[in-house]
Image (cartoon, rainbow, N blue to C red; front, side):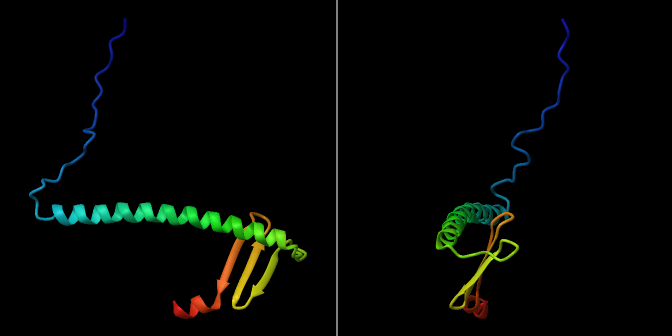
Length: 101
């Protein structure tokens, strides 16, 4: 029977910062804020996809005719919407929002 080779395993915890370290509280605060922001971004991305699908479906149901390249472009007030068929890319340009940025 073959012997198992000894394999070094890295410490799964990695380096630990001493909680009494002067930067520990600030690093922990920033890390928690980062984690919260990542979670919020994921939720916003999910909402973005849902709204994109709703917008795409509404444009398709409207019966608007695409141009020769299959692109549907139209303007509602100051908002221009473009739906590109290759990957059903959706673009929205809002003149009001751009003025405030």
